[in-house]
Length: 257
Length: 257
Image (cartoon, rainbow over all chains, first blue to last red; front, side, top):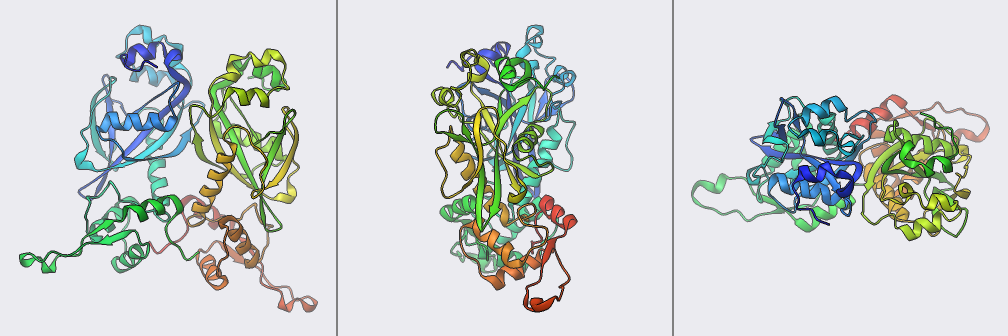
């Protein structure tokens, strides 16, 4: 299927190119200076922001559509991306808001019954290495940038709810699945891993307890210390054991039961 | 919107009644004699079985559609029902299989472009009290009955994968969220709760460890023992503290971090 036409042209004939009624929205989290950030797009006209999202080509897996959007906006491939919820409210894409968000599009497109139909959206969340991302706006946006979760701008539709649900999902998964791969540099201290957990959970954790639990999960490799100069006081560095990490992601962290 | 027409009549004009491209499928689990069962429908013609599922009315929430299907097949309302995954493969509803599954439908319907389009399916899982369910087939099925998870019949499309994913999700959630409400009678012993956990996890658990952990979660109320006859040796009965249970369902079980 021809996918290389300009997006506006394809949307005008949405029926020919895309699965009807289904969109994807990506909550892309990055971790920077002990803060959790989310990547947002600013509409070309108006003051509304939106999650990076898109539509699903007729012959495309839904998961592949989300991965495509993620790659297009971050310019990075093979990132951790996980489906977390379907937003299926009957009134979530209200026409009057669509029109504000899409007012930069030519009048012809606004008449497109396809674009103006009810959409459900499959929500995905991604964890990315903040420093490596080169944010790139899409054709509807003037800007693609990181925003502090505690200070979100005005968002279209139910996008605030989608972000909140992604965060809640990540918090719940923290008890059950490892996190940190792609959010932290390849080697890190237990202190910075704890800081990531504290940021996601929104509260302080006991250090001894955290270290004991985390090491008990058996997903970390301890790195050799390099004694260079005064570095003998430097804390140990760890990295994720990729095999154990992804096994724990699939099957859950080691538990007593 | 008129929803009381016969389903075949509505499907023949699917465009008028339903959201395109989106279906729901429910994995309905029941617990009986230490075995986990799943509720399945047998197609009127052929030997294929299917999950209870359906389509989403144009003005209906996706979650509400799944709840409606659950109620129609079990004749019970207000059950625990949770969205767990979207099955979005481009080839999951293969036409040749649809035709076998739907061959009881008049020829007119088979020509319905609406029914023959690509569908993604939103998967839900439900936990129900086995004894209370009165299984009721839908218009495409001759039978609605419980099946042992370890001995599933031939299933259409990706329905086996949907069941496996539901089970995996439930296993992962076991570490994080309480389970048992609606699966066990109102009052139960720790032994029968442990048996439920063992059935879901597919392995034996240490009793002392299980009891300690479970009580630590603080979602159970201990019931008064009634000393009648030789019952002084009977184990304590427990029930779920509904408020604490549902709070833990939302926010995760109590953890050290």
